[in-house]
Structures are given as C-alpha cells and as structure tokens.
Amino acid sequence: MAIVANDKIADWLLPFLESWKRTNAHIPLYLIPYDDNLAITRKAAKAYGVTMVEEVAKEIDRLAADLYPLFPGHRRRLRKLQSLALPLDEVVYVDVDVVLFRDFSPMFGLLKKGETDFIIASPSFEYVYNKKKDDYPDLKDAMLFNDGYFVTSNKILNLDMFVDTMARDAKLFHKVRKRGMLFAQPVVNFTCHRNHLKIRLMSDLVPHASHETFYKAAGVTFKDGAPLDQAGREIYFCHWAGLQSLPGKLAFDDAWRDLSSAAWTKVGR
Image (cartoon, rainbow, N blue to C red; front, side, top):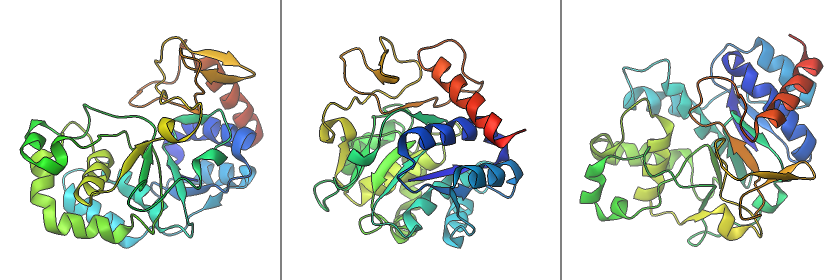
C-alpha cells in the first residue's frame, strides 16, 4: 500500500495512519514524500512503522515539469506514480485524505493482465477530460475514474509507460484534459486509456463491496464500527476528495475525529 504526504497535510495523514494501523497493519505501507517538508511526517512514519521512500524517480518530476511548467507547487501530485516503482508485485495506492474501515486483503490477487489491469473504487465523470474526448474512440467511451484509489502492478503499468505515452501523445493530452487545478488524475486516466488497460470496479470484483467512498454519501450506517452503504454493501474507505476544510458533521466525520485524536496523541504536536 502506498500514500503521498508531507507536513502540510499532517491533519489528514495522522488519521489515515491510525485507520491503517487499526485495520491493515499487516499490509506494508510506503510513504512517498510530496516534498522536503517532512518533520512531522517522518515522526509519524516512525511512530506507526511506515516505510519512508527516500528517493522519488527523477523521471516523475521531469514528466510533471514538462506537462505543467506553470504549476510548480501542484505538479508534485504526480509523485503518486512512485507507487509503480516500489519493489512490490501489486500495489494499492490511496490518497491521504482517506480513512480505511476494513481489511484490504481482498484487494490483492485480483489482477490478470489483459482482463483486470487496473482496479478503481469509483468513476469520475466530470474531472478527467473535456468534451473534445468524444472525437477519439478510445477516450469517448472509456471508464473515467477517480485516481485517489487504485490497484495495479508495475508488471502491467509502469513509469516508462507514462513517459512514453506523453512523449507520443502530449499534444492530444493537453487538447482533451480537463482544466481546473487537475493534475495527476487526467494523466493517470489518459495513460491507462491510451494503453488500452482493462479497468475494473472494485465492487465488481470484491464480494459485498460498495463502490461508495464519497464523504457526502447519503444513507450510510455503521455496523461493528465499519460503514455500509444504503443498499447494505460494505464501504471499505471514505475519501474527502476536494474538501478544503476539515470534516464537520457528516456520516464519516465522527470516525475521522476519533482517528485524528488517537493519532495526534501517539505522535504529539
């Protein structure tokens, strides 16, 4: 399992780590640095037994700079691609504005090249491409996804594929990508789509799993401390995607506060 973090998002990192420790400590966790602002991050990683990734592949930052020359403060979001260079047969990547509620062991062993290349939690219809995508058959009907969670293998999708795809198709990428402070998500979608990867929903592969992960989900209930969607299916994690402030009074927010309090007690401010 892999995440990207720094001290700027420590308020998200700490509850994530506590949720991982409670539900998935048996799965090794790698923390990829967003930048060098890591004092609290390193302290938290040590407290929780997380592996810090000390070097990010140079081609990731180079690719980000080529694609987004005007956004040096945001293009490091592509550092999530380092998850594809870790010494792992399979990897679950998760954004850090997430808390985990269930054992993720069922997420492993599902990949099969050419049939299940890339597993996602939920679609994202609005935040990938603009309307020009409809001019291109391999993009028009592609499954668009939120890249805050994915499962894949570097035997299927690796860094070279991102570099080669953009070397070949950068002009097309910039033509079809959605603007609006979106960086990694269009890149990951485009690379998967242009390489014809078979993208599958987690909820189609894991028995009883819900595709629901959004922090504003309606009809959520809790059983034995873990959430169910309104159809009674098992929610594996909650993602506060796009949220600019800390959680308030929605379905998952009390759980987040409990995790946050426990984590800060362990790590200290």
